[in-house]
Length: 635
Image (cartoon, rainbow, N blue to C red; front, top):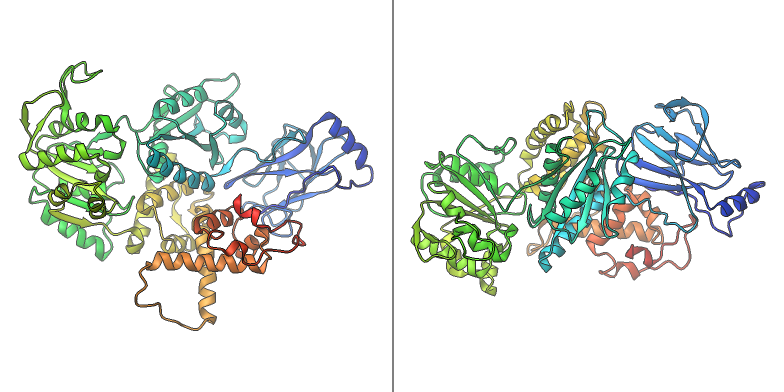
């Protein structure tokens, strides 16, 4: 989406009769603005006396919003001398509504609400020196920021948290009616993103699970005349150590929140109780459609007959826990517990006491004897997820357990016999870690008696549609929706997208699509911006291939398909920028992608770092009114 909202400056000429209005407004220090809420975020539109601002889906509207509920030119907003805003419907299909009444032409005042299709606009006021930003990011921008924050938190051993907030009750309440309550309880460093038109996500940098819950309780405190706010909470490392898993956990927590318990956090600790066979969580059953996954599950069936350790290797979100559960449930241990441990979520000083238990008085706070995970899983299976995150001392203790089948609680010299099967999983290169000395080579030899490589989702495209339909069904149940299908062009985009977050990213995308979809199907417009943008780039690439000479890829190309696609994406973006004299707004229109997506992809691909940003700097501002200087690349 791109907008060309006019901005008022002291030197901007006013139309006849507008100078007096401008002077009076400057003296009153109240400038009416339009705060536009749409599914991808918000836009703040500045109004100029006597000059209309047309909002619609495509050009020639001044403010363009990629929402199919809007007409091409839907409505025009004009600031009046009286301080009101004239709202004129431009023959739209879905109509223009002011304060709940459909109008052909009407006047809105500060505080009023205007609806164009699904898009809600509030008439606000702003002092001239106030920020133009409404303080609400698109969900894609927030998700990208969360990914960066999780990496930073893990690298420095810090914390980060995520909240999801919506109003309680069966009827949805638009975020514009309660967002200020949320923002009033946040810190200056916190960021808010629009998850849907009735829910927001909040990123809390440097916040532990406890701090996040305190903020959530303040947000949920009842306010007279306002709706009850429900809040789901997840934190890194307590809940998970990846952005997609944090979002998944936070969303699940929000679904469990209720009026009597408005704040819910997920989960309560670094390990979860899998229980006996037959208790596989809904939606976690494996989907086996590709040849690669059929081979994996044939191996699982053979391994289930033994008790040897198994190491599962694969990217984050590929379904390693699903494979581990299948190993447990097909084994003779299926009636006994399966305990799943997130090794990255255990504080370093508590790893051994969590795994092996402790005696009363073993350390400050040990007020009673406590069994460890291996004792709790007696006769069953222990699944150590992200085993590469274990500190060296815990690795040595784990090696002893594998060799002796005995554990000693912290604070005791007595060893206890344990009978468990160990399954470990990692997305890291343990051999490289062993070479660098951060992972014990002898432990690696014990763990990889049998190694299963889980293929990424992009290598099992056949499973994308059945997985998407399963997640659609689950999202319908969780959100009380009745979405029946995914439109063919949307399915095509899902199949072509590389899914760096794999199955978990797909699930999160479908969950949000179900929430924001209108009608009985998921369309292209309901998919995340990154998926839509990738589709446009792929379409552009296909057109280029038709006219380009066919050149085979070098035989020694070690970059892989993903690397080549990223290189081509960078090339397409750079060509568009050069054609537009490095004006990002014009380049975004040329590429048919939202401006914020273009800026994000430039950052991800490191376009300025590669030298593209200075190859052909513009010598003068673009005639469209926006400069295309290199400073834009640092936004």
